[in-house]
Image (cartoon, rainbow over all chains, first blue to last red):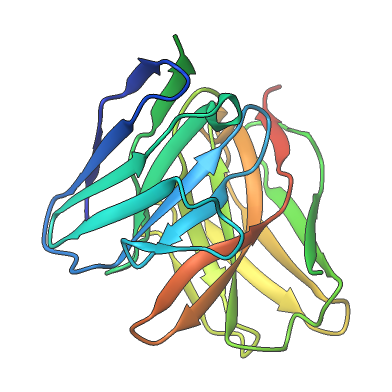
Length: 107
Length: 123
């Protein structure tokens, strides 16, 4: 299985801050990476696919980059509604695997 | 718009079989280049992909669960189902059904999710 490692596991930031989360794959996955947002008690929501393409309707403050084994997810200006846990997920090979998640809190 | 809804028992005894159904509404389960997946999440933990089915009946399972999992589809009812045998406390989790959309070299993601259903394995 391809292992996905996110860092940090948790993050506290202020409204308006730029927030960055990293995701590392255990092998080269090209650009085959998605990012999801999960709010407490809710199902995950797709934000970014293909490492850097914003899903329709997702605010432009969210962005993704990277290829190969190293990826970055960024919120350019943190908003209160962005409080959630964020997961990366690879689709280069089965089984699909997710990172362990990054819990984002407001400082 | 398409919506997914999980249903099934919230409590299953150890060694028994967990059975869940996902009902697709707002669209046909057979339309488009979709596959239909089950994903689970133990309390306070991350997401684990269980497996998927295409409406052709073709399936893929997570090797960690493959010996215990069966996913099936009933296109006439617009539903797909999960069976997990010989459950233990480690199978206690929120179970999500999700639609996967695949477009070659462009897109392969879970774009629509059910709300999730909590299943507890306990005697």
